[in-house]
Length: 232
Image (cartoon, rainbow, N blue to C red; front, side):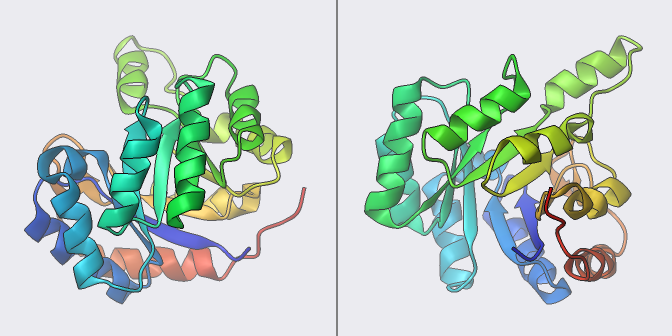
């Protein structure tokens, strides 16, 4: 598949999320993500507002489902999400429920391998249970905690190629990437490039980052879209 740019709207109010989404789409972003902070702050209203404003754009609802999988996926799909996120640390039955809801309501399922004991095995497990995409994810708190201890901060790029080789479904790398690293993801075979905190969002204040965001996003989108995803 051709590379896709997704912006994670890790914001805490609908108005700013809508404004940032419109800016991002002007710059060439392909998918919108109702980030976890937005869903916590605004719930289904945030997803509905994005769907109403942008009726033809894919919307990822990053609810990070751990239980109640069918109901959560159903609610997000009915609110307008085209993609929902379930965690690899959830029970297998929860992942199956999300996958079944995805089939019933026309919604794709993204499986997130964050804090899996074996990240590669976690990705493969998610694929085997029927997920449509893998999110290879190093968590925010994990990265900050390790860095605060004076150790090298882990990166999803550390095992990205191994994850890509382990599965047949598209992979997205998330967690502490610089702009340059995010742009490089398709070269690793990961076509879904996500931009969020701290690339475009102030991760501590959960507000849009300062600077010329639209121009930066346009540059990133052009660089990502110009690439071909190699087969490994």
